[in-house]
Length: 178
Image 1: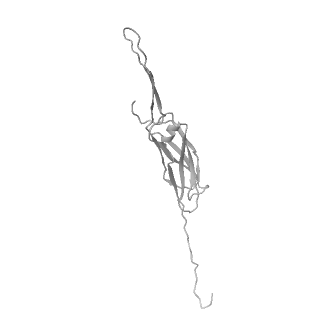
Image 2: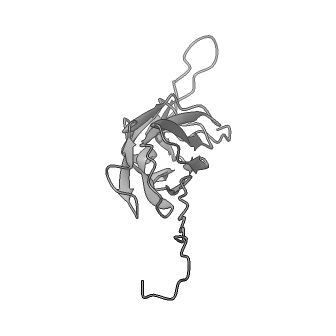
Image 3: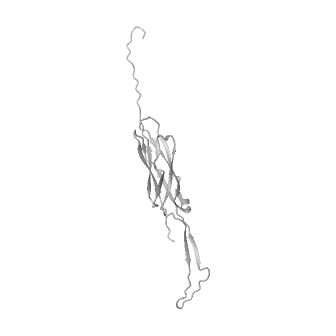
């Protein structure tokens, strides 16, 4: 067997020995003439999620998280994504991409879109987390060796500010109570 780094299902090889009865040769193989061998998958793959730098604006914007597959996966697969709010509220962020599909190529990347809702409110920076779910579309052998569950925190950096101005009235002093 040739070594590789592709995550694949276990493979079965069947070797059958045949008796030779042609010409002067006459070989008796005996029993059993057929053997089955299993080549167990020894490869793994990991999905890595990367967060962008996010600065809030006064208008809605779409930012892109990136999911990368490090090793090949025979037949490809899909994985779900979920959003967990930290200090951000549901009015601040929306997960647009809820699953990504991979063809199974080593180094392949997929994009995850997240909408950041813009505002003009002076507030603290806000956080949320995107998490990769379990893979689908693979065999149980492949599923067991594809590392998922990776999560990445997104921080919405506030861009708003306010200025407080205090003005003092003009008072002219006089000899009477004012």
